[in-house]
Structure formats: C-alpha cells, structure tokens
Length: 259
Image 1 (cartoon, one colour):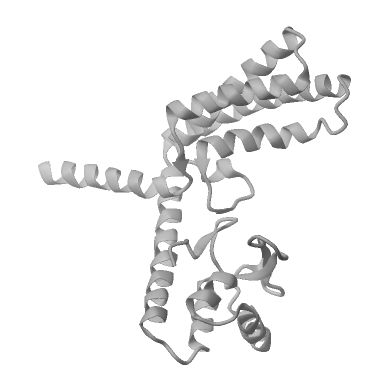
Image 2 (image 1 turned 90 degrees about the vertical axis):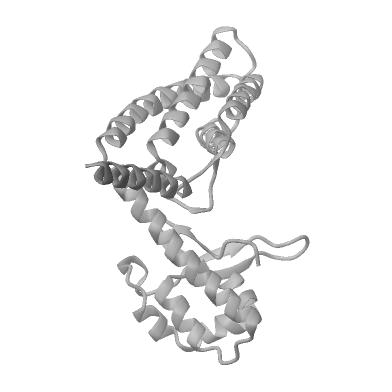
C-alpha cells in the first residue's frame, strides 16, 4: 500500500478506516461493525472534546461506478486499539502496522516542527504581510463578483471559492483537511501565496478596466497563475517544515560545536 494512511484533519493526525481495513485484510463493513460493537471504548479514547460523543465521518470517493463509502477517521489511540481487536497477523499485516505507526510519528513530528517555525519572528512578520495581501485580493474578487453579476452571472459569489481554490491547487500539494490552509503554511509558502494573489489582483483589475467578459477574465487570471506556478513549482503543505527544522537544528549544532 503506497498511499498515505495517516493524514491531517484540522490539526490532528487521523487514519481512515477504509485504508485501515485494506491494510488489515478485512472488509470495510466488518471493521465498521467492530467499531460500533465497541463504540463506548472508542469514544473514551477520543481526547478531542468536540468529538467525544460521536465519530468523525468522511466520504471516500467511489472508484469508477458505485457510491462513495463512508468511513471513520480514528486518532492514534483508537487506531492502536482497533489493531488489538484483530487476531491474525501475517507479514503483510505486520508491514502495514509498521507503516501505520511510522506515519503517526512522522505527522506528529511535522506538526511540532510547524509550531516551532510559526513561533519565530520571521514567520509572524510574514503572516501579517500575507493578511494584508489577502485583504487586497479579497477586495479585488469582490469587485469581480459585482462585475460578473452585472454581466449576467447567476452565482458570482462562487468566485471567492474558485479563485482561492485556483491558487491553492496550483501552488500546493495538500493531503488532509484544514479549516484554513494558511494556518499550516510556512513563511516561504505564505510569501508565494501572497505573490500569486497579487497576480490575481492585477489580472482582475486589468480585465475590468478593459471591460473584458467576466468568464474570459477568470480564464486569463488562471493562465497567469499557472505561469507563476510553473516558475515556483508546487510544494507540499506541512512536510516542508521537517526539512526546515532539520536545517535549523543542523546549523545550531554546527555553531555550538565551533564554540
């Protein structure tokens, strides 16, 4: 199994039962029944008060034909407990358990590295600047929404989501679910996002000034952001923090050794 099992869910490490079932060579419906059978114990292992009385659910997109599958998102304690309920373990399942444990630890390390990075003065300054650039972009999108509405768009408010999704989708590789993607970006990623939003702002401004049809403005802005993304390349959200922390730690160690 090459796909990541453990992913971010609003700042927490979570594993979905759909892939867990595959890794333990069980049918997903059997795993769900097992969790429901021991529901009280699983809920006791939920340390997030928001979810202490219910499970986090999400839908797994259907492959080809069929309906999406609903799965539970389990924390590390719940995942470990679930593993104890399965008796037989062959080498394949043991490899899966090893991968599962490693991913939980790795994601925790990434989250710790992110918090350390976000506590620096450099990050705080960059975050403040990015908020200003975001406000400028939001103002431009607002003008675009009004412009599109005047040209006959029936759902112009959707462009707030479309422009944001455009920037995030072209610049970043995102695994997991986040309330606000900016909250888990590094300082360099915030700077890149701010620059891309300036591209959006300029494109909208020029399009409206030249009285271009709103759909053509959106296409033009997207092509500009795509060109920008080709220059900067995509980066993975959160994973970069480990590299950043590692380099910082190495530098500090080298400086200490020289003293």
